[in-house]
Image 1 (tube, helix red, strand yellow):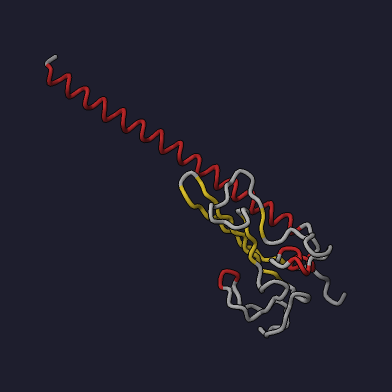
Image 2 (cartoon, one colour; image 1 turned 45 degrees about the vertical axis):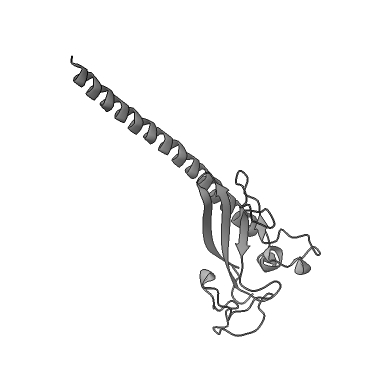
Length: 174
């Protein structure tokens, strides 16, 4: 073998080693991103399941931003923020919670005419087939919910969102 052949073989070996190590590093980084996303999905689903465990009529009061209307007394409800185990809050997050529940309305009030496209609002919440300006925090029949999880991950700022709609099943005429 000549010196040129040895040098070409070394260059090919070096490039191949670099490509292999880059692929392995990307796979490791991708698996971390997948792990973080799985934790976010699990936290969102657990939060929605915890909401389903409560009486439908109490959901807005339990999970809104205002502790004044908590069914068990001020400050006894879970509120709109929650923890996602294994995920770190953003450095500029005031409450240090990665999860947030978005409900229609502000605080203790819930209006049908509110412009919240992420919840499909404005929307008829009390089933009277009209979108009005009344407070429906006590007579809603459907409750659109969006769960946001925002965290500082290995690849920077990450966000996960999940939406659903709660409704109460009632027997007609009862």
